[in-house]
Image (cartoon, rainbow, N blue to C red; front, side):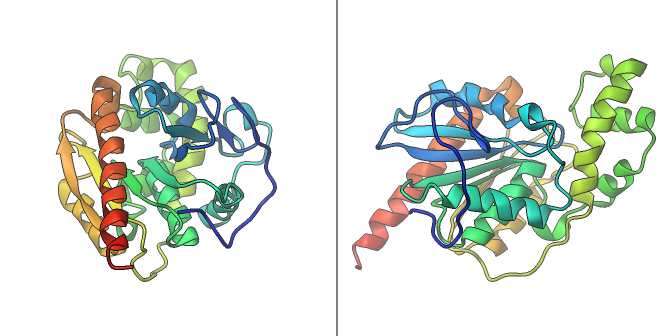
Length: 269
């Protein structure tokens, strides 16, 4: 259903604008999937999945201030302010049915956006994230304060960087500074209780993820009125790098279940 209640000025058009980037031109009948990236990531990388999705679903990468082509802008001070502005930008596109996807840190951002928009999002796909009440984990807090060398070794443990590159001092400094900003951002997150939202949630994680157990994924059920399940799939924390078909199928599934829920509810209207 369309977003309501939050608005902000933004540009429109194919390719790039202030907040969002797409891989193809928008069409009048499109639904939209807004994608938020993991710590140190770029949501534009997710646009490679566009060709595997249904023709009426448009992926939009959410570009955060201080990252990617917005690198010159001030980096967000806190998650609450950041997600306020993301929610406002999405709400500006009030004529579109939309869904949210977030991986790891991006999942918490997507969750906070969904909370701010309440029932506006038709579905939220959580990927490789602890539940909101478990964020930040002690490990993430500890990592945010590590020296660059130790920090990058931990990132390699999460499969976030090639282990060989992790031993390159130049790579250590460049990558660590970028990643640490995100780790410090998520370390400052504090979950504020709210009633379960009306947006359906489905959660997914790699069976070899060293940070997110299935038990944590199941805790997302407490945060929604409609839980579409949690599943473990082949792979590690970045399972979709090796198995892109898994995330494409998961996106298709949450949209299918969301549409079925709407159709079932309409019988009683």
